[in-house]
Structure formats: C-alpha cells, structure tokens
Length: 301
Image (cartoon, rainbow, N blue to C red; front, side, top):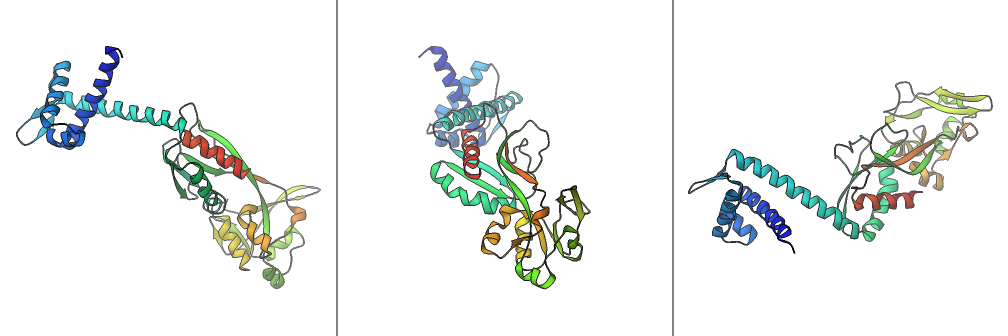
C-alpha cells in the first residue's frame, strides 16, 4: 500500500477523531468513544494542528472551544465523513440492498394494494427497513420528504424519474339496497334525482364523464357527503348512503361479494387513471429504491 493511500486513511481517521472530540466535549469522552486514551486523543489533535499550522481548539481545565479555523475544519470534517458514509452505503447496497426506505402512498390504494405486499418485500429484502406513510397529501420527493411516492393521474413536469406501475378504471357503484329504495338509473341524467357521493378535492362543481355514440359528455351531480378517498366513498355506497364513482381497485371486494353493483356501464367512458412510482433516478439511486420499484412493477402489473 502506498504512503499516499496510508496518508489519506490517516486523514479520514483524524477527521473522525476531531469530530468526536467536539461532539463529546472532552478528550477523555472522545477517547472512551473511540477506545483511545485521552493523551492519545490530545496528541492526535496536536498533530492535526501542526500539519495545518493553525490552532483548532482552545483548551482550558474544564472545557474545549473552537477557534474560527476549528469551526471551519469541523464543518468540512462532518461533510466529508457524511460523503464517505453515503459512498459506502451506496456500494454496500449493490450487494445486499439495505437501509431505510421511505414510501408515500395514497390512503386507499396504499391500504388495499401496497400494504398487503410489504410482508413479501420484507422477506425478500430483510435488510431494508420500509417506512410507509399513507396520505393523500403530495410529498416533495425532490426535497427529500420520501424516497418513493405512488401517484395517481397526470404528473407535473419535473426532473424526477417516473415508473408506470399500473392503471385503474373508474366505475359507478351502488348497493342493491339503495337501488331497491331509489330505483336503478337507466341513463346518466337519472342521477339528478340520486344522492351522488363525491371527492372533496375535485373541482368545485363535480362532474362525472359519460359516453354515448354521439360523443362524450360530462354531467353535473350532487350529493350530501364528500370524502378524500375512494375507499370511504365505496364504504358509504355499500352502506346504502348513495351512489359513488371510484377507482375499481377501491371497491373490488365489495363488487366481488355483491355488496356493490356497477351501474350505467353502457355509458362508462372507459377512462383510465395511471398509477406511477415517482423517485429521484440516476446512477446514484440507492439499490433499495430500485428493487422496491421493480417489485411493485411486477406485483401490480
């Protein structure tokens, strides 16, 4: 091993030692942390100061304080040590993906479609700690609020990487009990006399799209309950409260059991909402992000 490599290794050790002295507040405490004697720590700091030709620490019998040069050296040391940790984590990830993976998913889709897959993912990648947050609030991936976000519908232009995971079709549903009380709508215009349950984050005047041979059109609907997710609207519809238009995934169990039935299917425009994974891509993308996105792509397709 060359003297230059040895010197670089010693410098990395010196940075770690100096940062430990400052964080621990004394040579003896830093020595206990690094398994060194207080005198060895003191001599190491003196060697750093001699090499740089400046005083980094002001010593007294009771405390240590940083000089201006010491503060600058500490900031550089912490930055370099963090970069080293990131580099080592990235290399280690290539062999066995590991570390904390922060995932943001919508309430309904996350609970119904993402959470049931996490047990299998954990078995495949036991060294990844999956930290999932279910929320319909959009998180800022670029700002580091999450590593991966599952998004529905059109996406705003950005520098983020997008991977299509699947798609969901919309369906209008009602319970047999509701239809027995209020009648089956035969044409979209019949919805004017029904309680239509809506999303509270849609446009101010809710409209549902429909299709006829003469062309597509939108119909204004009204109801007395709004919610921020399709699972809640589907539950209300299954309880006979009204009619809802939701993603089919959010009411798949109710449709299979007969608690809900699709209506006005002859007028369904067949609109599809895309489902994407959004993350920071590129060569430095951690392996834990890549394997999670690949896993969802395989399972949700």
